[in-house]
Amino acid sequence: MSPRTSRSVSQFPVPEVTSGYDELNLGRLALISAQKTIPTDLQRWQKQVLTPDGRPVIITCTVPADQVVPHGLDNDFMVGLLNLCFGAGLPDGPFSVSAYALLKTSGLPDTAQYYRSLQESLIRLNKASYTIEEGWYARGTQTWTTQSFAQLSYLSYVHSSAGIRGTSVITVQLAPPIMESLRAGYIKPLDVDFYRSLSQPLVRAVYRQLDALHFDERTANGLVPEISAPLMAWSSRLGLTSDRTDNLSRTLEPAHKELLARGYIAEVSITGRGRDKLVRYVFGPPPVGQYPQLAALLSERGVKQGVAVRLSTVLASCC
Image (cartoon, rainbow, N blue to C red; front, side, top):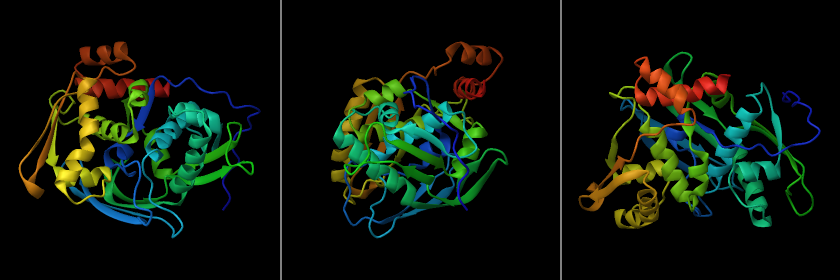
């Protein structure tokens, strides 16, 4: 069945995205490998992650024989698409943007190299098929569901013989479970200025994952003060491919140093030996979100701090 016609737009201005959003399932499940590069024959992976309430979830990703699994900059383009979708009013059907607008919203330079990366990324996000077993939270029914989808359920674009250019029109539709979750308000604030300022895809992916796990309504103030996990499980969650803990520690070190230097985390440690190593993150100052006055009003009425920050984002996005 062909998708519904996208809204008619004569030109595609570049939105000034300074307040950002992330869908909580995508943020917590880390469906895109944090690695900048991956083996050229990596066409399938399967991993186990834990839901916030501690239940194990099996996630499987597969791609066609001519593709590799999503990785690296694909995280940035997906964040850009989520926020452009908000800017388009969470449309009931495909929406269109220029390639230049998507690059700028994703925080990436306007160069031929990144337009090539954009085209490759869009294809991967459309071709990669995910199955999440009882691990996708459906806010409307408040249940953990099994879902199978591609993050981009529809993709079309116009390009020249040289590929996608700045004026190329890209039309996409996010997967139905993602759209349902966004409309139901299962979102959190994302400091897009901070996100864009981080130096490389791995650092941004680690930040995005930590920031999604930071919010937990079951805690005393709605925020987790620290996170601990087996290093092997944490690296698998991020999509790192090595099975050696010494290599994984070295891979994560640049992200740890940058997030410490920027004050996002106050402490990080890796303890233990061999495959029993544990990684521990202690968060820095609590987030204030893009709407601190609204969050403060909610807090004054007894709403937990972390919940107030998240709800202020939800309420502002609806108005």
